Length: 155
Image 1 (cartoon, rainbow, N blue to C red):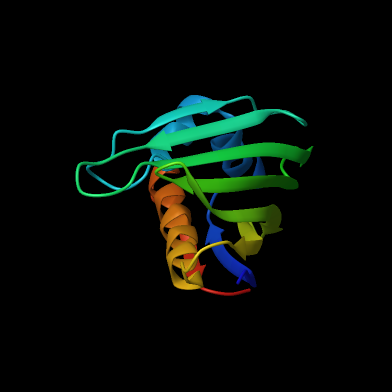
Image 2 (image 1 turned 135 degrees about the vertical axis):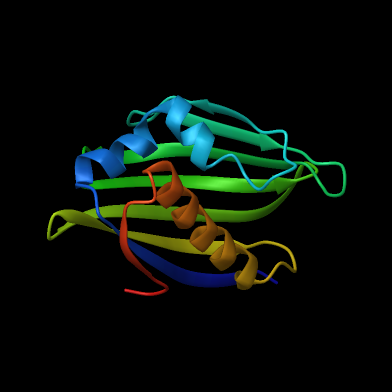
C-alpha cells in the first residue's frame, strides 16, 4: 500500500534570500551541503533551470546505494524552487515526491520553508524523510558560514 504524506521543515538564516537561493543553484556549492552524511561517496549532476535535471548517487559500504532523480518544474530566483523527484535504493523506487522550497525575507535574513508532498512506495516511514529534510537545512546553515537566526521544525 502507498503511504502519502505532506511534510514541512523550516529554518531561518541570517543571510538574504539571494545567498540562500544561490546555495541551491550553484552545483559546486550544492554538492558540498547536500552530499550526504560522512562516509558517503556522492556524485551530483545538476542542471539548474526549468526542465533541468538533477541526479544524485551516493554509496557507502554499510548500506544501499541511493539514487535521487529530480526535474525542476518552476524556478523564481530568490523566491521559490519547485521540483519533482524519486528516490531509488539499490535501484528499487521507494519514494516519489513534489518539493517546494520557498525563500521569504525575514528581517535581514531568510526564512526557508521546504514542503514535500510524498508518496512512499515501500514500507519506509515518514521519519526518515523528515530527518533528511532537517539535516539538509542544518548542512545548508553550515555552508552559509553558520550564519543563522535559529531553526524551526515546522512553520
